[in-house]
Image (cartoon, rainbow, N blue to C red; front, side, top):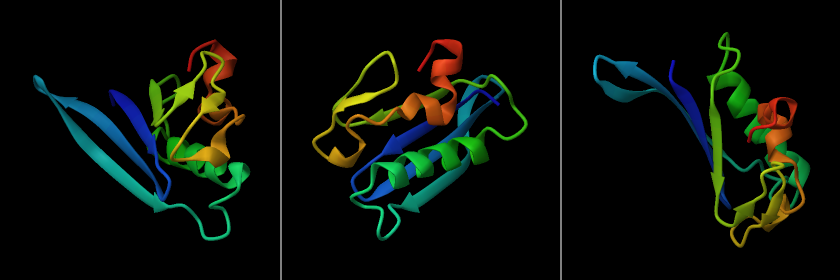
Length: 106
């Protein structure tokens, strides 16, 4: 396994697990979760979905790089500072859900 990437949108959380096959990188697994009904305005719900996707895609691979992307700005501390498409995550420590703060990386 090479890495995990997670895209947080206003209506979904999309995750991919990448692997190297020969000299190419390919998507080995993809998870697409609609933002859970009732959690659309909840930072806890979105952060939990990010953590769930990261956990499922990085199973049995401690230390795998995980990148989280969303429109706006996330500080080096892993906390979302601004997000026009997903305002409910502003102030949420997204890095904590994927292991960022434990090792000083996001």
